[in-house]
Structures are given as structure tokens and as C-alpha cells.
Image 1 (cartoon, rainbow, N blue to C red):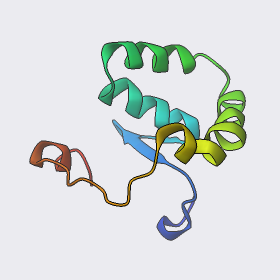
Image 2 (cartoon, rainbow, N blue to C red):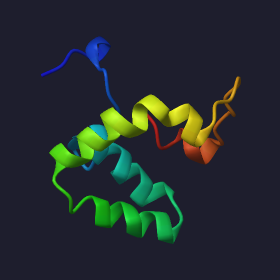
Image 3 (cartoon, one colour):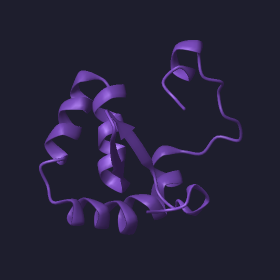
Length: 86
């Protein structure tokens, strides 16, 4: 029960199931990543969500720009990519 404007985390909807936080990120990686990334994401999903969420919120999120870089602009999604979003 969250209002759409109150979302403070990543949300991924798959086959009518709503995934939040680290589960959402890992589910996206399973589907959008290379086979190696997808396999690593599947393995990470075996860890308890409380541990995964802690690692993300306390380690990855505060350092995400340093770890993954930051762009001043966003690329435009292709037509096929746009079809995957609401």
C-alpha cells in the first residue's frame, strides 16, 4: 500500500508480482543483463532480502555514482525498450 507519488525505491512488476528494492534490481538484471550477469543476479536472489537490501542501501546506493559513473544526459530508449515500460 504505497501511493504512486510516495515511492522511494526501485519497483519492478513481473507477471502481476511487485518486486521492491534489491529484489527489483536483481530481477531487472536477470532479464536485461548478459548471461553472466543474469546468473549472478539469480545467485544473489538466494540471499535473504534483508541482507541484500542492507548491502544496497548502505553500500551500493551511497556510492553508485562512484561505482557506475554519472551521465549528464540519458539516452533515449529504442522502440523495443519503450514497449517494456508502462
